[in-house]
Length: 286
Image 1: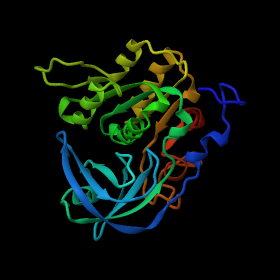
Image 2: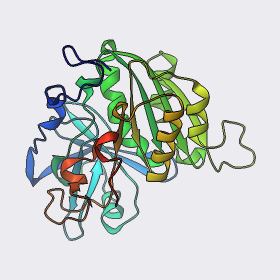
Image 3: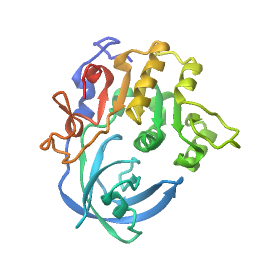
């Protein structure tokens, strides 16, 4: 990517201002109405809540259920009128969240953290890499791109799942691929024996794509081993560390940096992330 007056390796914070504002609009939980509930694949549930809050793709909200606690959930949409939350019921709070139905209410506070700085990517082509439920935060990125398509070049999406039942937003992505908004590449690492689609790990398809790093940026979200493997695959194609942005969603609790639960060598995932440019944290341990 290039920056007028700064050069191709620009690290000018003026050009990251949109993401680095880090404004938290709702410190106290606010009651929001559930507008829609939808099953996504075999494991996930989408809840659409009525909320008119500015946010960046990649940020997250703290979702509260009284008597059970709160959990950080990434935003899976980009809209001025609502927020989509994709919930995987793996804990006490998330299991209670998906018991809610349209017309019920949740408590929300946020948005927290820094998201993907979409203005920074204008006039570039993009690569999105998602693994499993990591595709959900990237859905917010895709919504943003679809509404600002004139500002971006080619968009290639590489999404990997264990099996076809884990895939999410299939209808939306089929529509986007049909109208040429995005090009999708899928991989399923543990499909049933009868499956006839693309198998293996998504990194294989990244390397086989032969995409150059010229005027391209990469956004990655998923399990840490998948993200690290994807970065290595991108390196074989000539991508630099400052072209890669990852969502490092790990062990977030308070969302304010007070508890220290999500610290990575002095950086807090909830405050300094969850989205980081790779060269900012690649040497961090933890």
